[in-house]
Length: 235
Image (tube, rainbow, N blue to C red; front, side, top):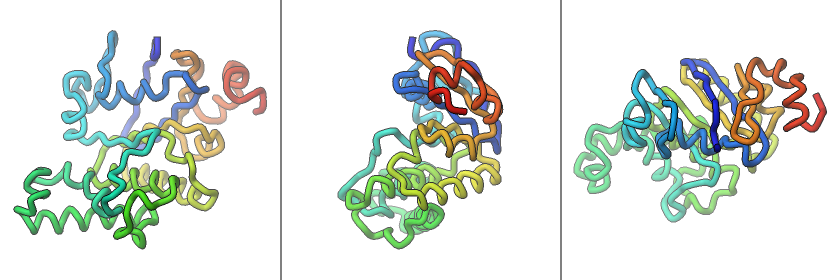
């Protein structure tokens, strides 16, 4: 089973990280939480409603936004336009009206929100560049900006540190702390254990689809089962 016996919650203003070896079930867990897949047993609840009934669109409308392990952008469109896709989810006119420029005032407002989020992730100076021309690390930051433009209450980040340089990771740490301070709930999957231990309030460790440890970062880092399965015996 890809995800077996996993049970946890994420509160407002809390960052919960999920770690584990490749194939542990982390990405499948994300797909279940975000409504991409429906569970064959059990339930995922978001703001009191079952995600399996809401589906992806319903969950997004209630304030769930996510990034992906493999970057999903429109490479030929601008950085600003890609970020604005997230803002369109919160617009009253909808994607079609905005795409047809039928509501210029709303379009300006949403583009302004997208520009604000690009500034938060350090991409303000690349707003008019083609998204496909960005290095991989900055494409991941663009995905975060797009998710933030949707004004989420729950943010799912799948490997946001992959491909980031040291300075970019420090900026990511500062951004995650700021978002948490704003009351956004964050569920993070990340291979960089040092980054996880620095930013997480709680850590869930998975192996072969099952949870093997959960708790405070310092506790998890010392757990014998975690050391054996994932951290290579180095505390």
